[in-house]
Length: 372
Image (cartoon, rainbow, N blue to C red; front, side):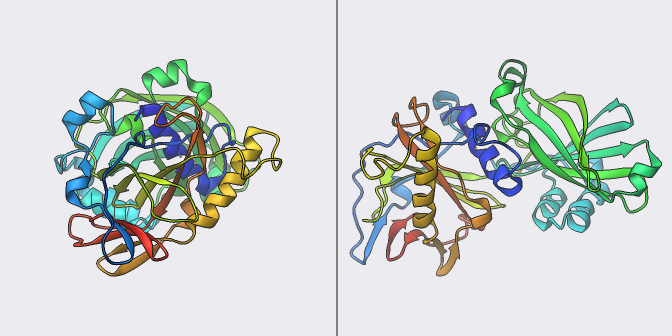
């Protein structure tokens, strides 16, 4: 899986929430190429048993040899001075209502950056990175040297590129910006705290990254302030909470309504993401579209109709998909991450602890795959 494909899925997920980026800018992550498998069905129902002997856990050595996503060992960084004060955890818990990140900070999954840049009436400090491998949370402090402006606005939006050095310097037009939400400090009138989801494709893997803040929007203003504030750093490996990514080698999902194949499932502390791929034969929608975008819109509608009935079951507890976080259908025209011309789609469920769960199923009605 290429780093660029991984970034595509991340921007897709984040921008579904805010809908700020055009369709051409939405980028996706795809799974491994579908391969033939010798899976067997369980006797009960039409569930495919795809337990431990059939699945693969990505490792550091495998990443080096196959350019797959990095899965970090369960190693928390030493508690930094910022985390030790308890203020950063309180910030996520009280201002952003983000209990998950607050807990991770208090467990030591945070790395201080402490870089500052200024332009015009703004001083923007990149304070730290927290979160897990899939969702690195960038924390900014934004100081506004305009008492009236700060006095009239309690919240802001901050837009920034979060890319590897190569991508930032040579491929910037191919990527969209991420959006962060900022809340005014309770005591300092001109200070806003901002949390922004960065691109794990580079941030989480120890590569040199560039964060470039380009826009700040105030809640009661119709136009943004434009700027270009750059921050460059590399996050030490193991600095974020690990995820588990299990590959399923393009196993056919046992459902007659749609021919689709499961690539991988990611277990993050924020969600459980599932990557699928499926073919398009050019016949079923013949005459219903004139452009590639039209085709993807129709396939998106078909996929959404199918995906809404998907469930994830862990030890008897059933979870539906997160409809606010659905992935968009994407055509891998060149076969960069799979079969050329096949389509990819993602669905997301609430987080599941795959380490402690005894049985995990991905189901569509009575059919599905036993993941564990």
